[in-house]
Image (cartoon, rainbow, N blue to C red; front, side, top):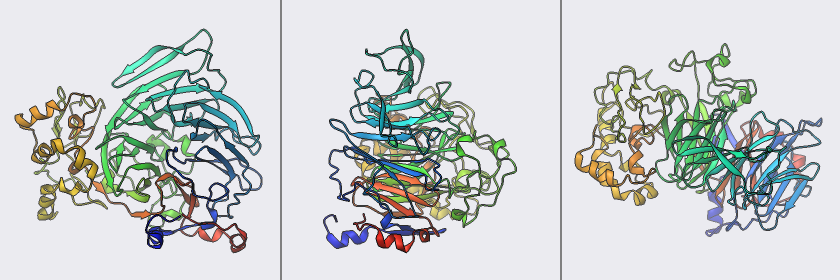
Length: 596
């Protein structure tokens, strides 16, 4: 199983890692895979994905796991940290011909011990509704591929609904379906419902109600993933054109946008309180975006290749006690529910998101934990801390050196008026189409981030900061993608990255590069895509190689976190203090196998 390099290569793969809350350990006997445990030859196949559901059965072991490997789909009882996995007894197994499963999602509302509703998307564009407990295939949507012929990239039940689900495709389209309706025998006819910047929404014209109910066309290229906000009211989409677009789902309106530093965005997730969105993709970065301010507040650099999954850890982040689906994100929800959230927070599942009196007030204490996995086979864990989230409160110094912060090149017809006393953009940036955006002139915090070109006054070592300004671009020279692909305007970037304006000559050069809507030269340095030195650059808490093949899954559960790689191995990592739940008797009698 080892790649070239034999034993040395095997030694590089970590089976445990330590964070400040303790040691996370790989449970070798809780590994799920195909029953033969043979590594899957993943060439040309779709990513391995994992879905969980709890069916609330009487035995107390209600967790179920579904995963796809190549043409196969498996459904098992998931024993997690409690007992060893028994791969000889899948509850359901399906092998498909002519198409491969690409993604799946359980309906948590309707799940019982006798029946679960599982949606499965396929590489040829179909969506299947199956019940792996009853072993039924109840319905097939887009069967004749009249609605969309491209690969299904993401499928999810609409939060709070027993019948509505949303499907995205590699075509860049998304469709809203109702399981009660048919898809019709002819191609659908559409009528425009709403249109905005780089998106449109159509309704289906027909005498009787049929699927799809709505068709969303979003951006250019594939729509790689979408995620509903915890309250179900907003939808975050990431596309191959490099844009994050956040919509009010019911009103079908664009709330805000963000552009990747380079390349397509591949994955997206929401913080448990719905206030922050993290996206990852082909720029090897994780980007943190504020939902309230509609702007990038931090980037994380730790991966050496594309980031395939990002996810918040609801159990290590301070999480409100009630069901996260009930959050509305409003401050009243968290009233009188404060708890100090210290170093041992991983063991405190009762901890809650701290009360914030307003969006500008400082909470008692809040730290968000999120993770990412990538094609570099590495797992990274990140902490989003107060000095990143609320930089202007502890660092309210006189800003005498803000030319680096104001190094934005606004698109034509957009005026950014900076008011350093209130730190807000008074003029709406028409290029960003996001109202109420904070300007980039805030002094940058450092936290667990790399040195930055923050204010050179106010007690910070000015020598360090000045050198950081001088090397603002070389700090990121390790990104070979950025290095190769953007060399055509690297000179302009270096010349202007510490100026408040762009000279007329370089403006002419940049204007030549802004032919297409998604040209990086148009967005780089604006609120859509700040320059690297304009926002804090986070370093990961841990960055560990944990597999031989590219990683495709990261899910945080209460007792463990779950990862999976393209060879078809689903690994369970026990949280600190949880490893003892797996008894030695179970380990002794469990089937042997090789661990990736």
